[in-house]
Image 1 (spheres, one colour):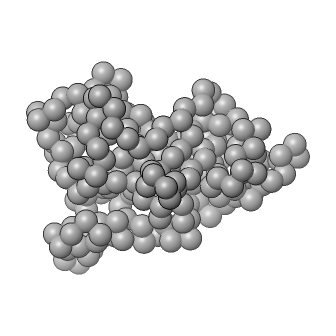
Image 2 (cartoon, one colour):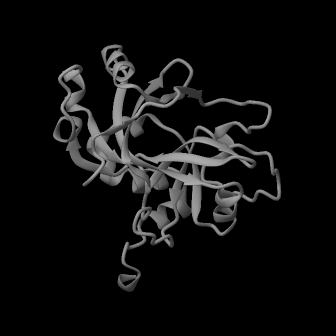
Length: 218
């Protein structure tokens, strides 16, 4: 694929799950079908959105996305967390300067800017119960955070929505909101992540999790 050699090294953003003036606590969003007529200033930054079983877009089917930025005015940005490519960074780039990054898993992050490889680090804070992340790391910053014990991932592309676009999709019930959990760090179990997160939301969502991917089999 052309463009594998490009690495996105734009500004570093640190986001911690929490309650800012314009945000609701993420615990209140778990499994909620959002209606932005209720609160047009609600931010889902730091939350998960899970594809509804009815969403059959080839790039987002049964996907789990972490929203790294979201506002009504600026739109939203996120990364798909449950679609590993089966590759590691060393398969795609020569990492002579930072050989420790060669084994970092490469994930399919979304359909936008797939010519870029974006590094991000993640951690679950046991004390605060917060999922912490830093996106758009330089290779040197990614190597440093790997040494510090953070989980580091490389993403091919990302998901992006223009102003009001995600809100419209939420109103159409294309997405189910959820709280970021420690299991997001487990690449090995990513195939079952969508189903496991839905099951944990309650009986109705447990039924949704069992919906066959091919509607004709229902």
